[in-house]
Amino acid sequence: MKIIILVATSLDGFIAEKAKQISTDWTSKQDKDFFKQKTTEAGVVIFGRGTFETINRPLKDRRLIIMSRSESSLDIPGIEWTKERPVEIIGRLKREGVEQVVIGGGAQIYSLFLQDNNQLLNHSQLGLINLSLR
Image (cartoon, rainbow, N blue to C red; front, top):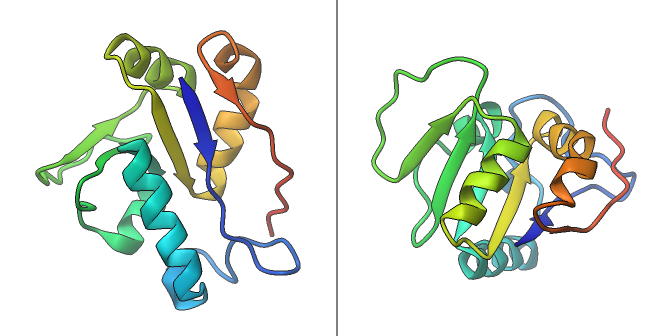
């Protein structure tokens, strides 16, 4: 399985000016097109709850998995909620035959996937990136 960590950053390396900021507020049309292309190609996108709440809707032609520490009371068609750790999610997706997944943020989700990197390498190809968070 190929895992793609997709991050839009400012020139100074930050992913947002403040919590709950919608990335479409400050990213370019080319950034948005690239995000749509890569996430549609992968077919599966993993977000944290906070990042999902900035869009708060399914994305056309993409399966969304939302990581959260608490149970969700939201029942939105096309949205899967999970408390699983990254290695558990990736293991499950691999057993389902998923070939690619995009990690779409936010900061805590990027950190969790990078922390689980050694275990994830047993399941997939994971490219490492250098993230700077405020």
